[in-house]
Image 1: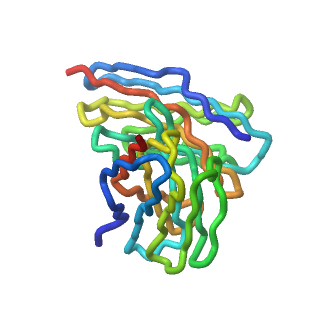
Image 2 (image 1 turned 135 degrees about the horizontal axis):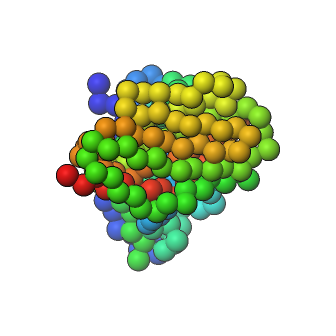
Image 3 (image 1 turned 90 degrees about the vertical axis):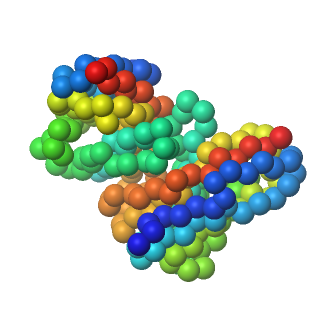
Length: 112
Length: 113
């Protein structure tokens, strides 16, 4: 039981490049979340999903896209990377909206 | 939009002593959930404790307890018998019934041996 896994751990992008941050969970959780954490700040919700095929915007969705084709996977796509997207990205999953969220180890992304 | 405020960027406590971390939030909703998360240097977010707004009783988890004052919109975390392993960033979080999460800016807790 690996819990929530994220890849890659680190990535440096040039402005305008695209990339996908991968997130997978093996706990059969319906709810999955993407957050970003800027230096010295709390987490901000980017997107979330309540089940396969269903996604919804969080507080800061601009510049990102998500998909949820399976229960296990919830990738986050950056289409045109900008310096403002430099952050640490966390994926999380939960059995329900009020249950404990289990977080992945995070992906540190730098856009230069 | 809801906001969560943690007014103490840094706190310190002697080992075995008690410390209280403050959190206030702003909402017009009556039904919501509140959480305290711990983030050690490993960056992994770990749930410490949670509170349902409709429950009058304050949540308790071993050495961790909360003081939930709904009318004052206050949700403080008390750590008793502090241990070196408690040193971390602590985040207060609010979740509304629409599954939207809002986090505070965190309090860095240092435990002094």
